[in-house]
Amino acid sequence: MLTERHLEIFVALADEEHFGAAAQRVGITQPPLSQGLRRLETLLGVRLFERSRGVTLTDEGALLLPHARRALAALTEMKEAGARERAEGRRLRLGLAPEVPARVAAAVAAAPGRAGERTRLAVSTAPTATLLSETAAGRLDLAVIRHPAVLPGLASGGVVLLPTWRLSPATERTEAAGGGGRLPVAVRPREEAPAAYDLFIDTLASRGRRVETVVVPDERAGLALVAAGQATLVTADAGLSAEGVERTPATDPPLPLRLRVVWDARRPDSEGTALTARLLVDALASQAAR
Image 1 (cartoon, rainbow, N blue to C red):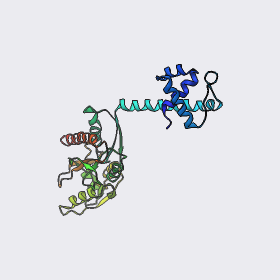
Image 2 (image 1 turned 30 degrees about the horizontal axis):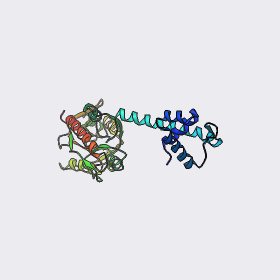
Image 3 (image 1 turned 60 degrees about the horizontal axis):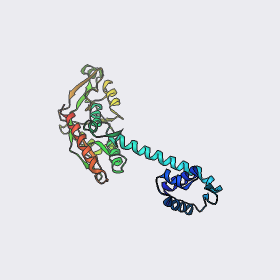
Image 4 (image 1 turned 90 degrees about the horizontal axis):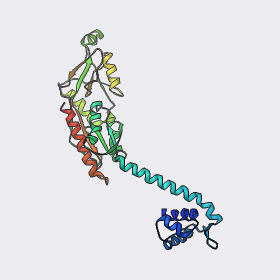
């Protein structure tokens, strides 16, 4: 097997043109250096040095020497990159459902660092169904998803309930529209989180209300429809509002945003991930209590 030591011996002997000096430079004695050179020549199938008069490169050795230098430089860069990775802490890939409010997302992302963990965080946002598949595939370490959801062999923390608000057009605008009927509820597509979607709709209908929906890509689009007098919206974002929009607590019936942290306990580093997950759950619970 070709090793880094073989390359070091080759380059040192080419530079020093002396077995004793090359051995000292590599940090070994002369016999192991000679043995290493013979093994390298056997592996490559060529003679690298002429030894009859001093130590000089053969034509084959001169041809291969630049390759050996580049290989050693690449190995050095790899070691330096690894050292930087260790110094900067472990990489943590966190996924967040788009329904997670910005302030909550910030608290969750900051939780490991505040607890003294050295991590380099990469954060992405995706629907719950995507987060589950990405976590199961090992492309995410942790994810904050909507509950309930079918977990494909993943571990999970406790369910955290965030309070929500119902956004609706101001009374005078609703009356001016002359609709008279109940406005549809702006919702994200069901396929993003089927079980959570169904629970939300079933809860709305539990009071005997007829539930009509209009699908929106995100809460900004939902807010725009509310401001235009065409829909209502339930959100956990305490700062989401606009002119002509009324905010009331979504308590009749209660419509909390149910969140939980998931990770893959089958991975080799799952113990450390589980500890980090507890920090995220605590951060969620702290935000829910505000």
